[in-house]
Image (cartoon, rainbow, N blue to C red; front, side):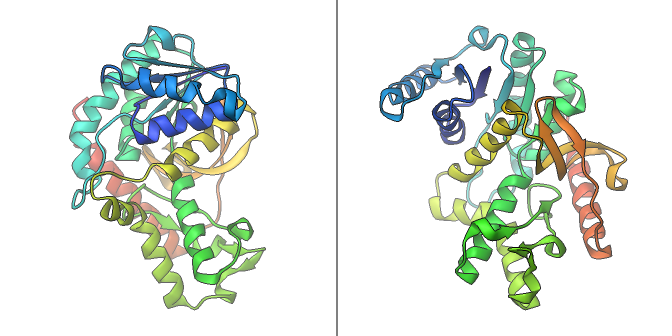
Length: 307
């Protein structure tokens, strides 16, 4: 197994480190346009191998020859969101970056599965699919896993209980219009409404929607990377180990949930082939309306693209 991570910033480098430490690949290739950055970070990660006891080889490069034959390509390249900047404002710059790196990567690894982490997530996944020409099961956006993790974290913080016992599902676009499914949120199988009243739940939903910008506002000069990299690596694990994990991911829909011609977060079974199955769950009228609104927002941003 060979895995390439494009973008040696905080998200990409941390993802490469996690992939190497978990030995999900014989070789991990870290790519970035900045001279010396991927080489330095790649060597630093590799030098931790005798301490963390892993044998994955880590290579840093500014080109794509070293990426040839990758099974999975994780794309994190792009500028980070700054305070006061919306995800949509990132679109023009990051679309050009994702377009270029996708073309370069798939030329060397035409059989790879693409995991997109760059923001605005759903639109960048669309860019990657169109540029690569790949089937939809091989282009997957990382969004719902991160948003769900944030929702679960905030519930755990509110109730003072283990995150392990909280099950939740966040669908929709990765942004302000995401759709946390309260109807499917449980604690050890018990509906969350048995623990919290509606105003308290709505407060947690709002914090989840604002989860990314909350961290941006704290950091001031950067954005989240520990949780986003963990979410991307959970997807890598599901593919490498053919786990058929049921995870919320951004995928291209062709009529599922009444939506088409857009990327949006829905539950999927994720395995060695990529998207093995799109799972359909029953939604309340309110949830259906929110998912449609979220999809419409993503489609409106896709329409602004110049590919």
